[in-house]
Image (cartoon, rainbow, N blue to C red):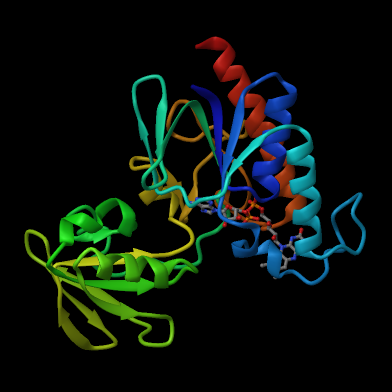
Amino acid sequence: MTDIIIIGGGPAGVSAALTAKNRGKNVKIISNSPEQSNLWKSKLIENYPGCPNVSGEGILKIFREQIDGAGIDIIGVRALNALPMGNSFSVSCGKDYFDCKALILTMGITQQTTYPGEENFLGRGVSYCATCDGMLYRGKKVAVIGLNEEAGSEAEFLRSIGCEVEFFDKSRAKKYEIRGDESVTAIVADGTEYFVDGVFILRSTIAPGSFLPGLALENAHVAVDSAMKTSINGVFAAGDCTGRPYQIARAVGQGNTAALSACEYLDKI
Ligand SMILES: Cc1cc2nc3c(=O)[nH]c(=O)nc-3n(C[C@H](O)[C@H](O)[C@H](O)COP(=O)(O)OP(=O)(O)OC[C@H]3O[C@@H](n4cnc5c(N)ncnc54)[C@H](O)[C@@H]3O)c2cc1C
């Protein structure tokens, strides 16, 4: 079992991984591709010490080289959720599961807000993963709200297993509401109602509260103390997901603290 899994390969996650590895822990990072991160879009970073006049893409490439050089595994997928299993955690990435003793959340900010009905029907018709739940909707009608790069191929996958798919890309609708009773019965997209049995919402990120049920939040960010401990024993968080200011230097510092706290936690259990 891995000692520490880090969700997110931005500045906070990379810093946490390097520190934990230095402390002799076995570490894995699970992260979307760097191209999907907010930092990739930055043309010029002028306030991060040691890397003058670098772009977001440039600094992420330097981070990646350092992670590869340290021999740290990066699993390049979206993590869907984590479940506490007594003294460990199981992280689901769709078909694959990864177990760890401690978790560090460094998933950045999720800019999308959840849609009305989304949280209420999660697991009762709302899903974030076509690969995991598609078979449940074989022969049925589903809506796919495609907000990430893989959404088109995920919709094709659902068609290939026999689902009737109503696909909404970013240009087709802006506002959604999910309706139902025991389970989902319809989606309303920009005022038009479509009768469906399921709704797949495919974003590149997942809000921390949906990722780890029961995690305490504060103003939509993960609530942490000064040691970067969250409300769940064995779970730590760092970087933009913990609040403002959204800055690389802060994310790196917090990643370091979160890793040291996670190491201390592991040495005691
Ligand atoms: C255009 C722009 C310019 C900026 N310029 C500056 C600047 O000049 N100086 C500065 O200090 N800061 C700048 N920032 C802010 C800076 O990018 C952030 O503060 C910093 O990247 C936060 O690091 P982080 O590790 O917390 O999160 P992020 O860098 O957001 O990294 C999080 C990573 O986790 C991944 N992820 C999220 N959820 C999941 C999941 N469920 N499964 C797998 N992977 C997941 C994301 O895709 C991302 O790769 C800028 C931001 C933007 C958008």
